[in-house]
Amino acid sequence: MGAEGNEQAVLEKMRAILEESEAAEKEQVRLIEEQNELAKKRTENTTNLLQFSSATAHHSEQQTGMAKERTALTREMTRLSTRSTELANIRTGLAQERTGLANQRTGLAVERTEMARRRTALANDRTTLAQRRTSLADERTKLAKDRTGLANERTAMAETRTDLSTRRTDLARERNVLAEGRNLYALTRTRLSFLRTELARGRTALAFIRTGLAFLVLGISLFRYFGLSWWSLFDGALAVISVLMVAAGTKGYFSSTRAMKRLQGGLDENILSRSEP
Image (cartoon, rainbow, N blue to C red; front, top):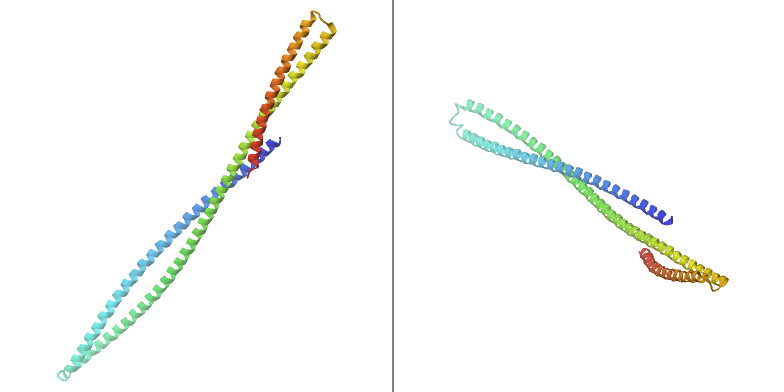
């Protein structure tokens, strides 16, 4: 009964270990799903970075166009200044056309003012683009920080997964040790069964010896009671049968004793193997 109770306790312990292993596998599956979600977030962040790069390139093209337009305006101003100088040189000869040239000069001044206003508007646009570029740079920095945080989380999850794998390996080793112990218990139980059988054989051999001695005592008693007569044949037969039974019982007893010694040696080896760590 004690061996069966120990075996039941070992089975319950193995069942608990299997349940823990199943829980560890479920936890591993959950970690893999979280890792996939993190990979999806990383893909979305990469897409946002690509969109940001496209917007930056578009803004650079707009800034280049503004620079070209500014150069054209500067050339136009230079041309107007040259034309004003030429008009001043020929003003003496064109006194009659002074009124028309004054009107034209006024128009040019108005155009110049309009160009200055346009230049101011372009400068304001350039300032707005610079501010937007700064905000996009800040957003890019924030996305980089988020990406670093996600990478740290992924590293932590990888470490957790490694710890779970190590724990699973330890549980597998404990399971193997328990299986080896169970095999040793089964072998010990088998050897004890053989030992019980040999003990039964020894008891049977002793019963043969006891019965043979009883027959011998009976034959001697009958010989002493009846003396030498026809009954002496029966007495001699009883004596021969008793001697044969005693010889067979003695042989069976010593054979059983040797078998029990061999089984006892095997049991001692099993006990020593279980006691080793």
